[in-house]
Length: 397
Ligand code: C5P
Image (tube, rainbow, N blue to C red; front, side, top):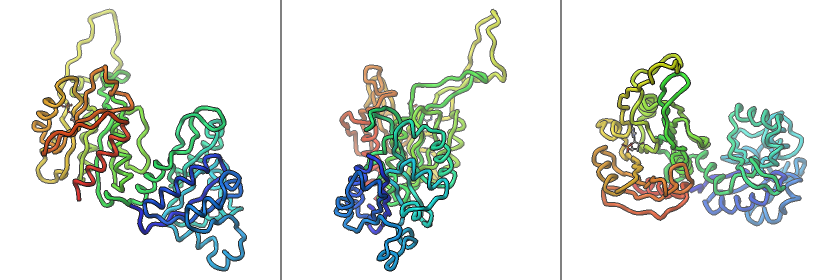
């Protein structure tokens, strides 16, 4: 997937450095060459010998290494890569980049490079939340430096919260999407996700329980296979993935407009839980409970975004995928929905309360295509997303 690509991997000094070894292994497995750089602190956590053995290349540690200076030089070293990855990116390294300091090899490379940079921060949760780190991260993002993670969870230091480095597999995905490499390279894919909010008045709205988790996982998986993803999302609980183009909307009508603007696309996936109805006369001021009559809400039907795109004729994406969240007779209802909406595939699932699927972390889906129905075992939403992304890549080849 990454054949012909070279990653300059800077390993910072933190306990997450051990995950850097796994990242090197995954990068090599996917065909990338890795130029490893370690800070002196990183060498306290993993040995340069292990890093060199896995990378199959010399480890660079010293700014004033005369042999290197004569042969290549740190400027050159910073330019030969397709992507510079810092994993783990410690508070110290982040601070140096944000502040423009270059007093060792890692920070000098980061300042001298003209290739894109991806940071995988990892540090104690209190450090991550410290105002100076918040400020530095915001500065780096404003400077166009991409970040992945950190994840929340138990930390090596015994505390809990955001600060764990993203898993190596997720970093590999972010690298692939940043380099737009992989089987979906050159493909543009539209994904809708999350609920919509339909206003009643300036403070109240009608919504649904969609968390946006499945749509977000799908967008991330597609980007991880190299696609350019336009992610049209309602107000979801989970943050959008890195490395996708995000279009935030509130209402179904805004979602339709954002979808139309995002076309043309090779594939369109409609994972959003769009409100079927909107309130006919949205009040411009807060509706008061004056002790009088109870308010009566009238509704209008929202546009069916999936059906409109699936039936648009000219400019229709070659592959249109809809979702069917059903509480009974899943297969029959979903098969009928596929025909009624005019989409190519339907990803059907049972969202009856006992399944815990709506808002949960797992999903059990049936994929309905023109060749029939396929039951997938219950699995993590990220796994469903990966399987779907690979199926899409196969379908496009
Ligand atoms: O009709 P139903 O809501 O069950 O269909 C579900 C599928 O249609 C999902 O893919 C959903 O994203 C899409 N949909 C849509 N616009 C609507 C309603 C549903 O795109 N107004």
